[in-house]
Each structure stands twice: as structure tokens, then as C-alpha cells.
Image 1: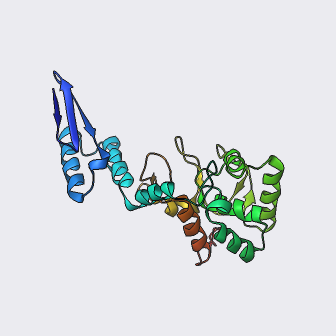
Image 2: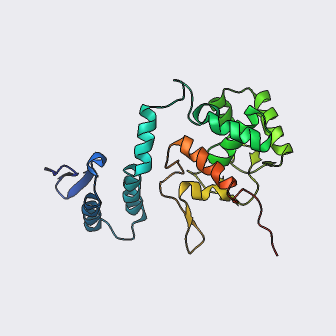
Image 3: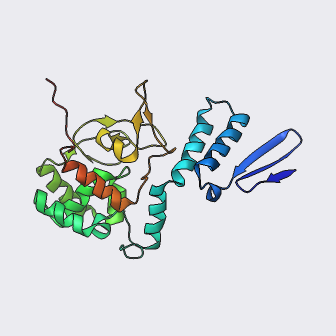
Length: 231
């Protein structure tokens, strides 16, 4: 048997039933209310997996993801290159970072990537920027000399340069991440001290070029990365 009402498709055989959702049909709050009602009939209210599924559906239908789709359709980044390379996606911002911190283009590029991205591993940076190891090391050493980043060894980080400040040693499927970055991805800390992420993995919720801008603006409004002073 199968029942198709547009938003929801139910199908099954005997006592086995499954539910499928068409995300494209989730357009209004009423649609989400309907979906939540059906989820409530099928699953326990404390079922973390199903609650996460509903939250994920809300995110992919949110305004930020619509802007991501719009950016995919129309971007200034050349074909075959990466939005995660700010020298291509936000060149005007790179010029600003260069001027404010007296950096080279390469160091300004790397700084924005470490500042804003959740997966700024050395391998990813070299791929996105089309850099050899020497180019990466030169930019990283420049940032370290300016004390904008620090060099360290941290488990599962996939990199050796970090923002100063707190560190979240997250478990799979996440990569560990600087505490300063949590608000960029709408990550909150619950009463038990654990982190709640809006999606099963830490991913941008807005276009990447907006993420670079948001991270930079925080540094210029009195919220730069750093260690808290203990009085």
C-alpha cells in the first residue's frame, strides 16, 4: 500500500510502514507543523534522531540555504575554483584585511579561512588555494608572527595553526573547532555543557562569502579571537 499527499508519502507492507518527506513541499510553518504532528505519532518525543531530522529539514528550507542556492546560480568565483578561497569569493574583503593587519594577500587569505571555516585543514587549504606546501607555510608563519594565529599540535585537527582562545575537542563526524567559531554555525551549549549543532555535521548555514564577512566583522566590533583574562 502507498499513500501520497504531496508533502508526505507513506508506504508499507503488512505491519511495516515507512514515511518519506518531500523537502521541496515544506514552504510554510503550517507544513512544518503538519510534519511534526506526524513525527509525533510515529516516534517518541525524546527521540533525538527524529528531532534532529526535523531540525535539519527546517535548516535546508531556511533563508540562508536559499541564499546558498542563489549563490550557486550566480557567483563571481571562476568555474572549477572554490568559494572557500576568499581571494576569489570576497576579494574586496581580502584587501581590507591586508590593510588592517599589514599582511600579504596570501596571509590575508589564510587568515580569513582559519577565522571562518569549520574544516580549514592544511590539506583543504592547499586544495582550495592551489598552494604548494611552501606557499602555505610562508602565509602561516606570517600570521603567527603577527600573533593572529598560534602554532600547536591538536588531535584530529588536520592542521597546526589555530585561532587563540578556547578549543572544542569534538568527536566524529565533526572536526574539532575553536570555541570562537561556534556562533558562526549557530552552535549552542546546553545545560549539561554539551554542544548542540543545528545539523548532524558542522556546515555553513549561509553562503561562504557571507561567512567570511560575518567572521571578519566580529573581529572589528570588539569580538576578536583570544583568551579571556581571569581577574
